[in-house]
Image (cartoon, rainbow, N blue to C red):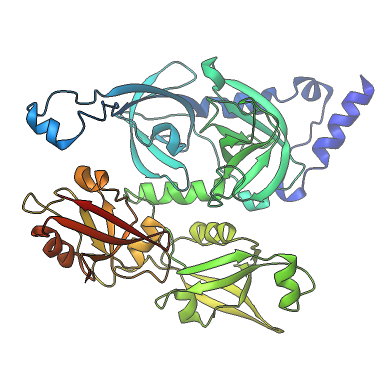
Length: 461
């Protein structure tokens, strides 16, 4: 027993002094374990029940517009399916702002939040972002709620003790313990290299999504979002969204934003590999190599060029495009960030403006009407804001599909397709698409770019 107590004391004492952790002082405090911390933080963690209505599948034969018209439009139509989503959330303010994961509540038509004292509230998403997987909810008619303090997640260190609180499998609020296993994890949680996460071995299971990852003081350091698993169960590799990004989401929600505004870099970059570092004459592979820059990029305005290496943003090391995006997102739109640039042996610190992706030229969003052969098709002129929203290549210009509509979808078009030409005529603006599809003749030849690759769609009317 003496060895166990000593081990616990040494583990807690080893946590960074920056975190200002509280070391147990008495035999009573040691015997309580994490109970005081849980008692402090748990009331701010809630259960979330979301109802999602999805369109059902219909018979492919009767989904054909010909049969829809022939049978009066009601035969064989898909029936909506109702799905129930279970997750967790964390109360950030006493007047009812709650954070959860976008994948828990983002598409919900009805959200019910249950607190630890069994009070129930209806809620709505006031700000959400699918890419970041964060949603801020506002509870209706809520006041004097227990909330949780957020810690500066940049001060979290590997090896710190951590607790995960949530509602796994719907069994009720559960606490699991572990340590911080890693920092600045990118791509491993979602598979798209867009995320930036804290890694923990505290057990996280389905239903824990949106719950709290706290330190030994009961302060929020992250929002549990996903696990890395092959079996579906927890293997001790869980990921949490850092509290600093959550804080920026909360700030924007309280300011009245209904969508998250992130600074636009106008840059494409790649992770620094050992081979690239050697080719650049670097001893240590560190930083992000700029592979492309938009002409309106604030980085280009600040003096950065393709081939430059970005090593730090506001003094924090960056080693991937996702990490660089995270640092700029936390700083928020409207200010500036200091970017450390390496060009050969020349190192410089450059001040970069944090701006929204510009709407230049105007998007000219257009939805085709019934006078065309593809009514419901929505297209937009490409500008930096559209590039950022749809994930297009920085060099992309012209017209892009925003929504294929029923007829365009059946023709093979997808959102994000860049329309290069129709029946041999060059497409430069949405008006060109309207003109080409108003009276195209018996054949339509669509030349598009999908992910930068040319694709030809051919069909007859």
